[in-house]
Amino acid sequence: FPATTIDKMIFAKRALAVIGLAAAAQAFAPARAGARASTKLAATVGLQAPHGGELIDLMVTDDAAKDKAMEGVDMELQLTPRQLCDVELIANGGFSPLTGFMNEETYKSVVADTKLPSGLLFSLPVVFDTDDEKIQPGMKLLLKQDELPIAVMTVEDKYIPDKALECLNCYGTATLEHPGTVMVAMERGKYYLGGSVVGLNRPVRDFDCKSPKEVREQLPEGVDVVAFQCRNPIHRAHYELFTRALDAPEVGKDAIVLVHPTCGPTQADDIPGDVRYQTYEVLKEETANPRIRWAYLPYSMHMAGPREAIHHMMIRKNFGCTHFIIGRDMAGSKSSVTGDDFYGAYDAQDFANENGPKINMTPVPSLNLVYTEEEDYVTADYAEEKGLTTKKLSGTKFRQMLRGGEDIPEWFAFKSVVKVLRDNM
Image 1 (cartoon, rainbow, N blue to C red):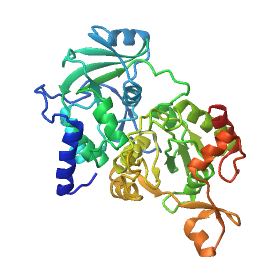
Image 2 (cartoon, rainbow, N blue to C red):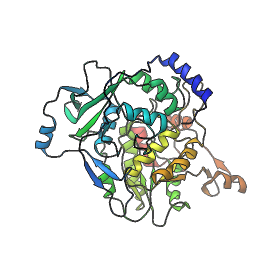
Image 3 (cartoon, helix red, strand yellow):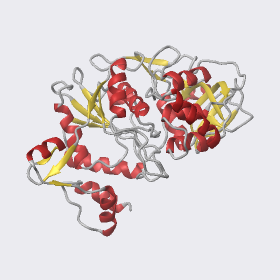
Image 4 (tube, one colour):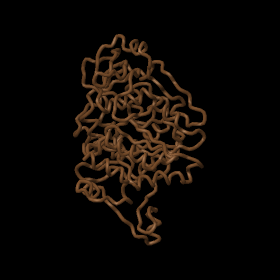
């Protein structure tokens, strides 16, 4: 995320005062995360190539291989909800070309330059945090979800990250008014661990999250696949937006949309992932659109604006997508104190237009749609030009109407989605 030298000095000073974190790294021998051998799946014929050229698959499936992977484990650790998402996306190839959590060299490269040491674009660090003083390089950790073994991690590096610089570069700010900075500074542990991962079992969730390999098997070959990312229930305007994206000049004939919501941890005031999942399932049945594919992503949101937009684009490339819809202020957030936006409305789009071609992904700008009494949903510019009568319903008013049992206009929300939300209030 770009920042001027003066900005960096101001933010760095503020960050050190607010977060109070050391920038010096411990003198552990650096080791490249993921040095171990892994299964790599070549790009499916007729589909988008994965990031880095090969789709990583670190999952072992038979019991004997799982037992062997767990031999000599030194310690068991319970995964946090965020760590659980990261482990799954490393193991199933969603974070290809990563084969483990980033070591210090890789972490610093991504934070400073949005690149892996190889030079490949990668916009956000993928790290495993801990406060445990006993963990040292060379140890073998069994990562668990309650009693279920999820993965084995071989620790190759342990270091104290420069969290102030990480927040400044990745989120554009180091103030604790940003939810991503709060996550880095107050939720993550003192140390980051780098090391290779072997996947043992898929996490247990209320909803199934298909792997990149499984999603790719459901995609048609030789046509554009437009990804739509969201973290909230889909209403009429969203639906119109991603279905009309199929007619965008950047998109080829016979293209399809992959609606790929994140169902992991997001902001504290967002609707829980299991409820969001229910809304997507009923909408899938209600619309039954043959040009839409649905899948769910076990990803924890950072609210990192432009950098996260590229991160989402890279992940969807691994799932077989060729295009990615970039919304206004995508992955943006507001100050918890002033309510001001941390990013400009088009910062994510500009950053995506600059970097998307570097990873062979085409950004598709989202239309600014409004509902009109005369012509249903049209672009805001068209409505203004024609003098059409627009209708609006704020999120606050929508929630009030939900709680009050009032009828929600169908131009705003789908009946099936409204029912799910009401049933889970």
